[in-house]
Amino acid sequence: MKDYKGTLLLVVFASGLWAVAGCTQESAPTTSTDSSAAAPSIDGSQYLTETEPNGAKDVIDVRENSQDGDEVVIVGRIGGSATPWVEGLAAFSIVDGSLDACSDIPGDHCPTPWDYCCATDKLPTSTALVKVVDDGGDVVKADARELLKVQELSTVVVQGKAQRDDAGNLTVIASRIYVK
Image 1: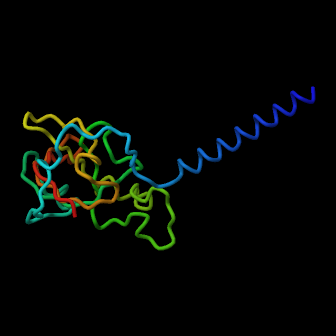
Image 2: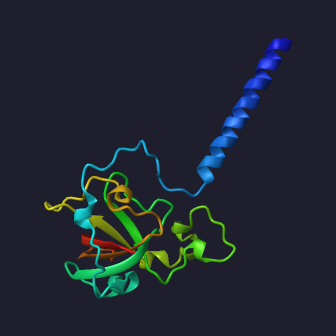
Protein backbone atom coordinates (compact mmCIF):
# COMPACT_ATOMS: atom_id res chain seq x y z
CA MET A 1 0.00 0.00 0.00
CA LYS A 2 2.92 2.38 0.68
CA ASP A 3 4.24 1.96 -2.90
CA TYR A 4 0.81 2.75 -4.32
CA LYS A 5 0.51 5.96 -2.29
CA GLY A 6 4.01 7.06 -3.30
CA THR A 7 3.29 6.46 -6.97
CA LEU A 8 -0.06 8.25 -6.69
CA LEU A 9 1.58 11.27 -5.06
CA LEU A 10 4.24 11.36 -7.77
CA VAL A 11 1.58 11.25 -10.53
CA VAL A 12 -0.46 14.00 -8.84
CA PHE A 13 2.65 16.17 -8.38
CA ALA A 14 3.78 15.69 -12.01
CA SER A 15 0.25 16.46 -13.28
CA GLY A 16 0.21 19.64 -11.21
CA LEU A 17 3.50 20.79 -12.72
CA TRP A 18 2.23 20.06 -16.21
CA ALA A 19 -0.98 22.01 -15.58
CA VAL A 20 0.91 25.01 -14.17
CA ALA A 21 3.30 25.05 -17.13
CA GLY A 22 0.37 24.81 -19.54
CA CYS A 23 -1.48 27.70 -17.90
CA THR A 24 1.59 29.90 -17.95
CA GLN A 25 2.13 29.32 -21.66
CA GLU A 26 -1.52 29.94 -22.56
CA SER A 27 -1.79 33.22 -20.69
CA ALA A 28 1.20 34.81 -22.41
CA PRO A 29 0.14 37.43 -25.00
CA THR A 30 1.90 36.12 -28.06
CA THR A 31 1.19 35.70 -31.71
CA SER A 32 1.99 32.61 -33.68
CA THR A 33 5.72 32.46 -34.27
CA ASP A 34 6.03 28.69 -34.68
CA SER A 35 8.80 28.27 -37.22
CA SER A 36 7.53 24.77 -38.01
CA ALA A 37 4.26 26.22 -39.39
CA ALA A 38 4.01 25.92 -43.13
CA ALA A 39 4.85 29.07 -45.05
CA PRO A 40 2.09 30.38 -47.27
CA SER A 41 2.17 29.00 -50.79
CA ILE A 42 1.08 32.41 -52.08
CA ASP A 43 3.38 35.40 -52.38
CA GLY A 44 1.84 38.10 -50.17
CA SER A 45 3.79 40.90 -51.86
CA GLN A 46 1.18 41.06 -54.63
CA TYR A 47 -1.35 42.32 -52.05
CA LEU A 48 0.99 44.77 -50.33
CA THR A 49 2.11 48.22 -51.36
CA GLU A 50 5.13 50.13 -50.15
CA THR A 51 3.36 53.43 -50.77
CA GLU A 52 0.58 54.50 -48.43
CA PRO A 53 -2.63 55.08 -50.38
CA ASN A 54 -3.88 58.70 -50.23
CA GLY A 55 -7.12 59.76 -48.62
CA ALA A 56 -7.36 57.13 -45.88
CA LYS A 57 -10.37 57.54 -43.59
CA ASP A 58 -10.98 56.07 -40.17
CA VAL A 59 -13.16 52.99 -39.74
CA ILE A 60 -16.03 54.93 -38.16
CA ASP A 61 -16.08 57.44 -41.03
CA VAL A 62 -16.10 54.73 -43.71
CA ARG A 63 -18.81 52.77 -41.84
CA GLU A 64 -21.01 55.87 -41.67
CA ASN A 65 -20.42 57.25 -45.15
CA SER A 66 -19.78 54.40 -47.58
CA GLN A 67 -22.29 52.52 -49.68
CA ASP A 68 -22.10 48.97 -50.97
CA GLY A 69 -19.66 48.91 -53.89
CA ASP A 70 -17.88 52.21 -53.10
CA GLU A 71 -14.13 52.37 -53.54
CA VAL A 72 -12.66 53.16 -50.09
CA VAL A 73 -9.33 53.73 -48.37
CA ILE A 74 -9.61 52.83 -44.69
CA VAL A 75 -7.10 52.87 -41.83
CA GLY A 76 -7.30 50.88 -38.61
CA ARG A 77 -5.52 48.59 -36.17
CA ILE A 78 -5.91 44.84 -36.34
CA GLY A 79 -8.04 43.71 -33.42
CA GLY A 80 -11.53 43.88 -32.01
CA SER A 81 -11.61 40.43 -30.44
CA ALA A 82 -9.25 37.97 -28.77
CA THR A 83 -8.88 36.34 -32.20
CA PRO A 84 -9.30 38.95 -34.95
CA TRP A 85 -8.22 36.46 -37.63
CA VAL A 86 -10.39 34.26 -39.81
CA GLU A 87 -8.65 30.92 -39.44
CA GLY A 88 -7.07 29.66 -42.67
CA LEU A 89 -8.06 32.71 -44.69
CA ALA A 90 -6.52 36.11 -45.41
CA ALA A 91 -9.19 37.98 -43.48
CA PHE A 92 -9.13 39.95 -40.24
CA SER A 93 -10.92 42.71 -38.36
CA ILE A 94 -9.68 46.26 -37.86
CA VAL A 95 -10.65 48.85 -35.26
CA ASP A 96 -10.97 52.63 -35.53
CA GLY A 97 -7.91 54.56 -34.33
CA SER A 98 -9.98 56.60 -31.88
CA LEU A 99 -10.39 53.57 -29.61
CA ASP A 100 -7.67 52.68 -27.12
CA ALA A 101 -6.36 49.14 -27.01
CA CYS A 102 -5.81 47.96 -23.46
CA SER A 103 -2.04 48.35 -24.00
CA ASP A 104 -2.65 52.08 -24.63
CA ILE A 105 -4.07 52.51 -21.12
CA PRO A 106 -1.37 53.09 -18.47
CA GLY A 107 -1.34 50.34 -15.86
CA ASP A 108 -3.57 47.98 -17.84
CA HIS A 109 -1.88 44.59 -18.14
CA CYS A 110 -4.48 42.80 -20.25
CA PRO A 111 -2.97 39.68 -21.86
CA THR A 112 -4.90 40.36 -25.10
CA PRO A 113 -4.89 44.16 -25.50
CA TRP A 114 -6.02 43.88 -29.14
CA ASP A 115 -9.47 42.68 -28.03
CA TYR A 116 -10.31 46.27 -26.95
CA CYS A 117 -12.19 44.88 -23.94
CA CYS A 118 -12.14 48.35 -22.36
CA ALA A 119 -14.19 49.71 -25.28
CA THR A 120 -16.67 46.90 -25.94
CA ASP A 121 -19.63 49.31 -26.03
CA LYS A 122 -18.05 51.15 -29.01
CA LEU A 123 -16.78 48.12 -30.96
CA PRO A 124 -19.94 47.33 -32.95
CA THR A 125 -19.75 50.68 -34.75
CA SER A 126 -15.95 50.94 -34.84
CA THR A 127 -14.84 47.78 -36.65
CA ALA A 128 -14.62 46.48 -40.18
CA LEU A 129 -13.71 43.13 -41.68
CA VAL A 130 -10.92 43.07 -44.28
CA LYS A 131 -10.79 40.28 -46.86
CA VAL A 132 -7.85 39.78 -49.20
CA VAL A 133 -9.14 38.20 -52.41
CA ASP A 134 -7.48 36.64 -55.42
CA ASP A 135 -8.07 37.53 -59.07
CA GLY A 136 -11.18 35.32 -59.10
CA GLY A 137 -12.71 37.18 -56.14
CA ASP A 138 -12.20 34.34 -53.65
CA VAL A 139 -10.71 35.00 -50.22
CA VAL A 140 -7.05 33.93 -50.28
CA LYS A 141 -6.58 30.66 -48.43
CA ALA A 142 -3.57 31.67 -46.36
CA ASP A 143 -3.10 32.96 -42.83
CA ALA A 144 -3.15 36.77 -43.03
CA ARG A 145 -0.39 37.03 -40.40
CA GLU A 146 2.01 35.08 -42.58
CA LEU A 147 0.79 36.34 -45.95
CA LEU A 148 0.98 40.04 -45.03
CA LYS A 149 3.55 39.91 -42.19
CA VAL A 150 1.13 41.53 -39.72
CA GLN A 151 0.08 40.86 -36.15
CA GLU A 152 -2.46 42.05 -33.62
CA LEU A 153 -2.43 45.86 -33.27
CA SER A 154 -0.60 46.38 -36.58
CA THR A 155 -1.90 49.53 -38.26
CA VAL A 156 -2.96 48.95 -41.85
CA VAL A 157 -4.26 51.17 -44.62
CA VAL A 158 -6.54 49.19 -46.90
CA GLN A 159 -7.67 50.22 -50.35
CA GLY A 160 -10.61 48.29 -51.71
CA LYS A 161 -14.32 48.02 -52.25
CA ALA A 162 -16.93 48.44 -49.51
CA GLN A 163 -19.32 45.57 -49.05
CA ARG A 164 -22.33 46.13 -46.80
CA ASP A 165 -24.73 43.60 -45.34
CA ASP A 166 -28.32 44.14 -44.24
CA ALA A 167 -27.23 44.78 -40.64
CA GLY A 168 -24.91 47.62 -41.72
CA ASN A 169 -21.67 45.70 -41.13
CA LEU A 170 -18.75 46.74 -43.29
CA THR A 171 -16.38 44.42 -45.12
CA VAL A 172 -13.58 45.82 -47.27
CA ILE A 173 -12.55 43.66 -50.20
CA ALA A 174 -8.89 44.64 -50.33
CA SER A 175 -7.04 45.42 -53.52
CA ARG A 176 -3.94 46.87 -51.76
CA ILE A 177 -2.72 46.92 -48.19
CA TYR A 178 -0.10 49.18 -46.68
CA VAL A 179 1.33 48.14 -43.30
CA LYS A 180 2.43 51.11 -41.20
